[in-house]
Length: 326
Image 1: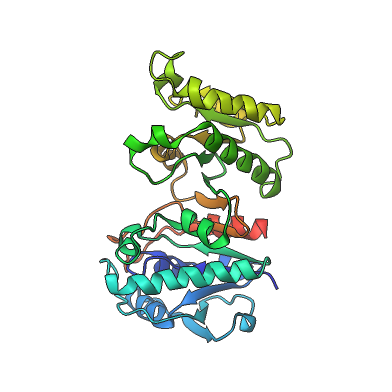
Image 2: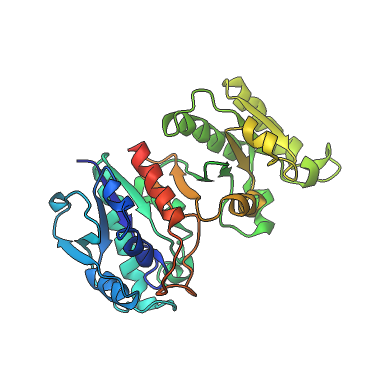
């Protein structure tokens, strides 16, 4: 049976709140596949009580016990103990539990190709307290799936964005981008747009690194030295790619209609545009790995965790995409 696996992310954030809120909607019973939460039932009992939401908790020892979703009901696969269920503040004592939940969820999907992983927002700051090498969901999934390369794509119905670099300091971006990285990640994007999004001949726009895409070398040389050679190589493999495009005009309405996806050189070069036009309805998907993984497009939101009135639109978009692909 196809199943959706939910890794709730940071315990003190809104990851638990979102799924509790969503299960009380009519949407919950319209899901074609059961959604199973991995984690400690007490976390969800305590958070539901805090939110004043009446939710039934069904605990499972095995994922094979999963049944179709019922409104106001959460199915939880027992996995560890959350030491502190209070929202709003990071607790180092919860970090190992959070990482164990993520690892169990990933491994469930590695071992069964009919499962898809949906992840709630994670606090890298908290996980780094116990694992200094941790850099985020995307890289961790790459490690556990033993994938050669990985690509982070964030999107909505209005825009799809892929990134050559992700969560690194801005001063390191220029040295981190190179012809091979651009070629490899854009090739992943082309393949996955066809495979997962069913786009027959994707049209891809690739951004320059510098203002005005370098102005023919007057504002930096990365476009000539790194991006253009990669574009040439990609075109030789019949990939429909255009660039380098100046980032300041890349996302006009006409361009968003022209290109199926854009490749940005770094995180904040393009992501503010997506969040400005699609915040609350965007998704994150990991491409180039052997599992299906989607996620929300926002952070842990400690300031509103444990409070009612959350916007669960991004989680709904992530679930919809995972269900569509699976």
